[in-house]
Image (cartoon, rainbow, N blue to C red; front, side):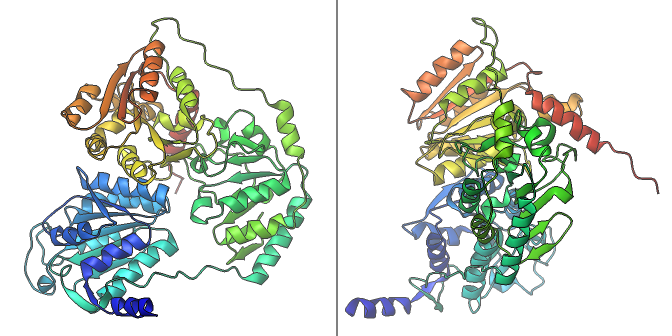
Length: 577
């Protein structure tokens, strides 16, 4: 009884805005916040770092802080970053746009102007020289689902709580600007320990759910060789388990779209690979495109995922299940039907049909093994990824940078519990450096393997130093092929050639005698095997950076095909007026 009384008293002791925000972040699962200090956020940072359960990780620039929050959200479910007004906000905004495109709840916190300066005619530093301070917020409006400008204490509690809960409900980033003079001030609306959130669960319209399940079961029941294809919105719909349960019951072959790799267990007996049109996993594309019914779970059909709009998929044969809607063929369409509810109900109704899976097993031929390099022969990219495949287990996670790593990593067969992330919808080169920092910080039970091209690395290289500073033990394979190889295969020109760096020396300079970090250059298969032995042995607790020297034209065959098709889509002539 005394404990309950003490708890009630604690709830009503006024706290500060900064403390309230810090506790809210901890309550939703954020243990690390990424950022760059600036004069408008320094007092706020004092209160964030005073929270014992919250760790501030200073990054080299705001863009990488945003990418790190993106990677953290992928591993943890939510991420956060903190920057200063306008110069920091407009620097981080590209990363926030990427998180928006990938449906990741990232709390972007900005230290804003002193509350007394709002509504005056004053011009402040870190702005474009106008007395209107809304420019930054306006820029964030299209890449966040909620924007809160906190410049008075009366509604600060409501604005902060609404922003954070909206990020969690919508699974999108939000923007919170906090005036620099407010974080240290107590207010009666802030209690020492905020009452935890209760987010009301989304419940399907029961009549629509029943109708959608009945129509889908009838549609699939008439099919001879139906298939399931998982899409990237499985994660935002929190329907991954329900999708696998449906697969267990129905017996259909299970494929994934490229941007959904890692969201469906690849050790599942019905898993047949990645469906990516002309560059699908061998035998997977043939099974999907020859099916007489296909259920796509949370797909995104863009020019990249459709290989320049060249998928051989017919709408009348498809069932498209989005997070809150089911559409069968050209109609009907059922709204307010949530994906996980739908799959669970469908699993209880659907009949087993393994015809397409049997067809797959009949035509399947195991993938060829790359021919071994001759002794001291320059290493090839397919040899590199053969050995990366052998490194994978349930204690690893793969992060694939935009570029040829998309295609090479897509061919990796992921063991049970092996993580996998890449940014396909937004495709911002350099994303993986910050994302590796954030993912590794959140998933400390895994060792991250990041595959990054030299061109992408040059965009965001600095925060390898932050990985070293924080004692991370990720493995970075730097693929040095002298340029923007993915751009070369879409449209070549002299602008795709970059200045070569001494990458290992750069990382050694970042280490500067502090922290655990090991680097090496690899030119042959023998050197690669020696490096992997060291990575798994003496340097298993170190950040390992391996620069792999490759021929500039050594690419996956998938990139060659994809590049030509995307180039064709990009170069379509204007429609006649």
